[in-house]
Length: 149
Image (cartoon, rainbow, N blue to C red; front, side, top):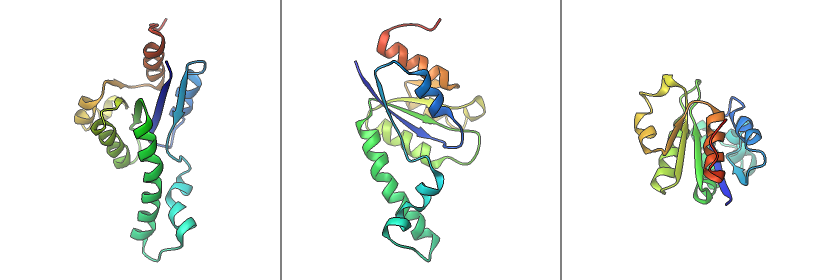
């Protein structure tokens, strides 16, 4: 079995690297959004031209990023969405809702401080983890049937 896993959510910590490194040797293809914050924000105006109004600047970038995000989520077998400690992560919540609407296997990753705020998102998930290592263990179990330890 091969899994196609889309890693969505916060971009300010190394959680993606922890998962991809922990899953080495497993038959998993990882994908995700552009995690270079500046490139993600400015891709629209860099390619399609400058905008005087910040709303249109952001909209151009969001629409271009949506091409990658939609394709990645639609092709994924499993979608992992990380909610970090910083910032309001509306994009992550949107990605989780999109994945749930498509019937994707959804793993949510966040700390206990977000449990109440994300209770509806968590309810749509097949697993809710608090550490990247738990996500690796879930993926390993799904692929091999092996329990940790």
